[in-house]
Structures are given as structure tokens and as C-alpha cells.
Image 1 (cartoon, rainbow, N blue to C red):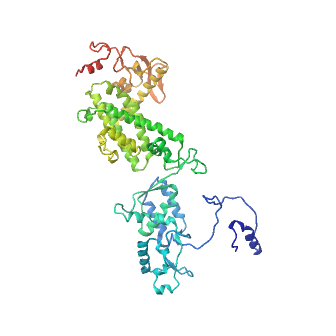
Image 2: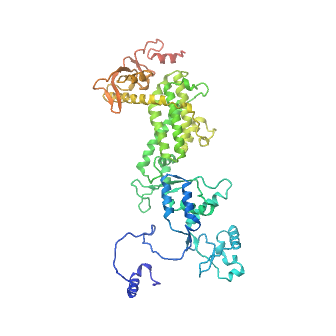
Image 3: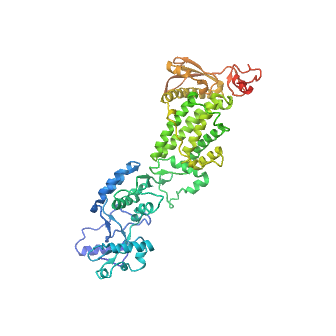
Length: 559
């Protein structure tokens, strides 16, 4: 109706024409939601033009795609419903664009009728030209050269539109997977952001189902987007972009990788200086775990120091159970692409099971027992098994740290940790009954260590080895459990007095550990100069008068 004027400046002319035709019902301004360009921020202008479409109904494309969706593994599982709803309700697929460059729609049509030329000979000529000269073969010369003389006289015209870029992306499964000998079709996994249910995932699905009868992928993994620490989209205009390279230069690549697995990446994730600094603290604890293992395993003799599983002390057999339990859990998380719980399980194992428990308890045996004692050999044996698994388990996350730790122990000539498979863990290590015993023992220990901390704050003691806690047990089964092992050693105390009953009213208790009360007394005796335990036996060995019996025997080399 109106031509030659700027599209935003013709409202008055259009309204005048409508009024002249008696078609203007009303005129005014309203405030309403309206789509805008994400780049220019200007309101969009809709223009009706002729386009090329792929029908969702003719040929059964929609039905094939919906059936294909149900055959694919979607991660997370809710993604299946999202893409299924989109395909169920989507209109026909408009595949044409009017631009000066792109992949051409290499067909001939009659402008008057819209009829399409379907001639295998013509198609073969076009395919051969594209194969030899690329897609520009359609544009570099008159496309009518592909027609026969008779067809040129019949009014066939080349289509000058190009394909939508989403059509290009949807065909990657064909020209990537089917043209390389080292790859196979369909793909094992497609990975992209959550917006690609409407984009690449769907265009690939429709093209493959339309041409090959099934989806081009066996599984699809969807991740969220990275936002700033306040949950805002990153943009240059807001100045809130966190550059990965800057994080890597300041903290190292492993810290950035640690941040990724510390998030639920299926949802949008946040990043900022404070968040990254939190990962630095977690990384330091993991690195300290590796450092302690390396130090404790120095000069480990794989032949001489091995201990048969059945001869292991209970604490080591419990740790073997935890390794077996963790192995099964980690494999499941890996198969589910569930990297956050994978990392959390590893981190908890390092901090709670190793550093705060096993390492703490066995420090005395490692430092003070005779080199060939069962307890020390068993501790080192199990630590070696922990090391060989822990470093390999962490390798997909802390790629550089894991390699550094691995090479530090097994020398620079050894095979990379990244060429190791997850070690097989014997099912015989699983012991649910033992795990239940130690679950209760750890709960009781928590009450004892809490009482020791309180005594330290009250300045009754300095170190825990100065104490001889009195353990009051209301349940006889707890008493039998505690008396079955050296529980003073487990609590890192010099002695332990076990009594039946509820204990005095002022005893230390924890609400979540019923039937346990603890009072703290100072250990009687003299402090051993070597192991620092306070024992009455210190000074009885004339050869080493400032040590306990155990330490004196070790120093003397007694069997």
C-alpha cells in the first residue's frame, strides 16, 4: 500500500488509507508486550512473504519424530517432555531465507504455479557440481545449465532462496558421522545448551527421521547457561562477563573445572570471584589429601607390605568397604553424566572418611609403629589401594593435578593417569555388617571428640592425647561394640574408661546420638617423647626412659 518510506514512519498514511476505505475501527496508543530484536533492541516488523516449508504431516514426519524421541536417552530426563511438547505442537518447518549468501535451495520451480521440478537427471547434475565446486556452484553460473534444452523452454526458474542455518546444523550428523571412517552413525551423544531443544537437537531429529527413519543420536545431554554471581545473564553492556581465561590465569584450569562439577549444570549456573574462591578452598583440601597419601606411601614395598584382606584390622576392612561402595556409586554417576554428585561423593570421602577419620586415627601407627607391624603395613596397603583409585577417579575433573600426583609417585616415564581405566574393585570388599558396626562406632566417636573439644575450650586439656575420656553407655550392645576394638586409639586419646549407665547430668551429649554420654578426665602418667601419649608405663624401659613400651621396642628394634 505504501512504499518508499521508512517502515516506522508510515503509521499515519496507513491509518488514512484504512479510514478512506472505511476499514478503520479505532485509533490510539496502547502499552503491551511486543517482541524486540535481541541485538538492536528495536521492535520487530512482521512481513508476510512466500517461503519454502517442510510439512510435518505429509510423509508422517511428526509421527516419526515423536516415536524417535521416545527411543532416545534424555539427560536430564525432563528434557524428553520438553522437546516432545515442542514437536507435538510445532507448525510446518520454514526452511528458506532471503539472503545473499548461504547454502542454496537447489531446486527449480514454476513461479506461476509453485510446481517443483522432480527430475533425477537434473538432481544428479546438481549433486556432481556441488561435490566438485561446493555449494557456490549454484550461484557462480546460470543454474539453468543443469536443465535439458526442453526444460529451459518450459518456464522452470531456479530458486534463489537459501536454506535456514538450522537446516545446515541439522545435517551435521550426515556429513560428519557418515564421511569419517573413525566415526559411526548414529552419534552416541549430542551435547548443547537447553535452548537447543528448539534448535540443533530438533533440526537434527527432523532431518534424520525424515531421511533415515530414526534420530541421529542415542542420547542427548542438556546443560544450562552461565550467569553472573547475582543470576544475571552475562553481557558486555552490563560489564559482568567472567572470562574463563582470566580464571585459568589466576587460579589454574583445575579450579575452573572444579567449579563446573560443583554446580548442577543441568540448570543455569552462577560464577563470580567469591564463588571461585570457594572452589580454591575445596581444591586445597583435595590436594592436601593427595599430599598426605604421597608422604605416607614413600618407599612403599608392594610385595613386602601387602596384607591379606582377612588379616586386616577392622578399620582397614571398613575403608575397603567404603572404596567398594564408592566405586559402585561413582560408576553410576558417570554413566548418568551426573558430575555434581560424582564430585560431592569424592570430596566427602577425602574430607570425612580419609582426612578427618582414617588418616587421623592411623597417624600414630604410621609414625610410631614398627615398619613391619601388621597395623602399619595394613594402613599403608589400604592407602596404596586408595591412592590408585582416588587419583584415577579425580582425573576427569582435576586433569592437571591428577597427572602431577600420578607422575610424582610413579615417575615421569610411567603411563599417564589419563590412560588408566577405573580400577576393578572386588565385591569381596563389600561388608554391610561391618559398615553398620562402624556407622555406630563413628557416631559414638563423634560424641567423644565433641567432649574433647569442649574440654579443650575449658582448658582442661591441650591436645586430645592428654585426655582419658569416660564413656557412659546406656546400651550394653554399645559397650560390647566399643570393647571389641581399641576405641581409645580410634578417639586419639591416651586411655578410655568405659562404664555402663546414663552418666552424670553434666556429661557431654549429642541430641542425634542417643544413649551416649562422655565426661573428660586428664590421662594419668607421663607423656611419651616419641608418640606423645600420656601413659603410666613411660620410663619403665631403662634403654629409653622417656618413651612408652611400644616406642622403646621400636627404637630398640625388638621383634
